Image (cartoon, rainbow, N blue to C red):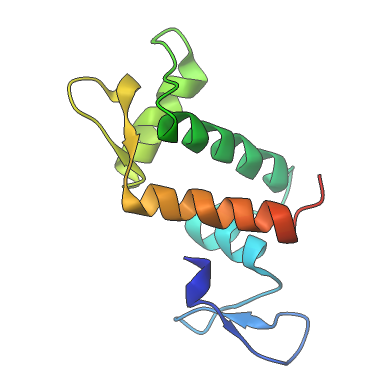
Length: 115
């Protein structure tokens, strides 16, 4: 996802996506365009929360039906094409798109988010 951004050497918004929209950094693109966050609150912490969830699916460390945040994220990630499932959404696995998002979030954590 973030590899689609073009780095231009102008202004404080140097990254441009395929639609001509400019971003300050790759993290901003992921948070606003991919995850559809606004910029208020703590989007970095929520992106880390999503990363942790995606890592659980990738490692097949599934949650249980009583864990409502986990279940919500299972439904959401399936709807967004980040994961898919067989007989139960609780035991979802990452799609290529989900793995790409996980890699992009990890890149942002290593390069643009200071936790």
